[in-house]
Image (cartoon, rainbow, N blue to C red; front, top):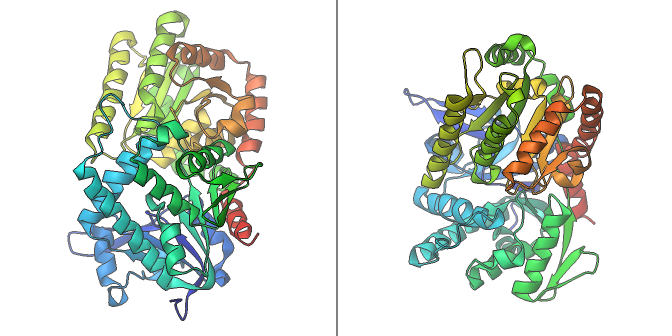
Amino acid sequence: MASQHGAQVLVASNRGPVAYTRGDDGSLTAKRGGGGLVSGLSAIGPEADAVWVCAALGDGDREAVRRSEGGSGHLPTDDTGGQRVRMLDIAPDVFAAAYNGIANSVLWFVHHLLYETPLEPVFDAGFRERWGAYEAYNAAFADALAAEAARGAAVLVQDYHLTLVPGMLRERRPDLRIGHFSHTPWAPPDYYRLLPDDVAAQVLRGVLGADRAAFLTRRWADAFIACCRDVLGASAAGDGGSVTFEGRTTRIGVHGLGADADFLRERSHRPDVEERMAALREQIGGSGGRKTVVRVDRTELSKNIVRGLLAYRLLLETRPEWHGEVVHIAFAYPSRQDLAVYRDYTARVESVAEEINATFGREGWQPVALHVKDDFARSLAAYRLADVALVNPIRDGMNLVAKEVPVVSDEGCALVLSREAGAYEELGQDAITVNPYDVEATARALHEGLVMPRDERAERSKRLAAAATALPPAQWFTDQLRALDG
């Protein structure tokens, strides 16, 4: 049933716009997040009567839900920047099995083509138990959205965590206008069919419960359509604009999320960024004459940090003229450290960086400056200093770093970009493109970026920045809302 005072616009995502930490004295501190969804929801204004449904991610969040009015999960607007937020306290074991066991260890791996297929995946009884948790987790969101939505409301469901929600919500509330947005790539049919047949079909049916399914690039949208054809036997419009299955038609859209230019330019010139720039210059050394290759990533398997380091090592091996003349500033912020494969990967990144420094470093020159503590101000400082930005993912839905660096760069920056990043669709023309698996070609691309004339670098950066900011987060969000009415 529709809520008597239901919202007209709803967003559903695993992570919400606020997170809580609990102090030793029992007090709760709320920290508001950023990102495209936060910007987008702010852009529609308070008159839109919007509510955000998200999951409690940790003990602080769970305590905040318990302390909310009647334990409903409706958070105080003082904590959320004025937004109406309902946080769901899903049982910790169910949440862990759904989030780590399925979303991050199965769906993420499939869409990013990350499996070492001679050994994995193994879909056994343990998988079926975790899949049951994923269904329960999605059902909790569908129930909450059904309860919060006014009649005919617009609901924007986000990402691979919540693929089953559109179909479940359609059953509960057929009056709603439902959209689903995928922030990841979508796997091509041959790889997607690693999933058990029934699960592969269930995910597609879930997304097709939406009136509209949208993606970051045309490539990912086409892969989804191909999976619907191959797995479900669905039909698709010749222009790729819709999929029809069991008498229902779901429209397909593409919205290439861009960088928020105004925010980035203002934020990157605050005093804390200037301080970080001074510290980085000191670490780079060489009286300001050294070049920099910059990367900023989480230690996510798909980001391809190890091969990036190997390419840099090969540059130093084959181009000794760069000894003492270049520093690789590598920000590898730990991600998903509760999964063993991610801990092992983070350790590998650190060991390769140490080996490069041990092999090539000398008095007054450390070839790799590796930072593993997340620091947004320091990332912006590195963006401003970069001569070359290395963005070489194995596969990436978009990759906003590729879009942010040209916007923030002081002197213009050469972008070495993987053709497997979603951003390649918009930025490839002015980037130096690489096959992310080809370490030799990546080393050559780094050299090409380092020797690129300053004027050419500046011109390319200008064009890259224009393309990168063509669809800022607020417009990206409101475009999807408008498209639901189409």
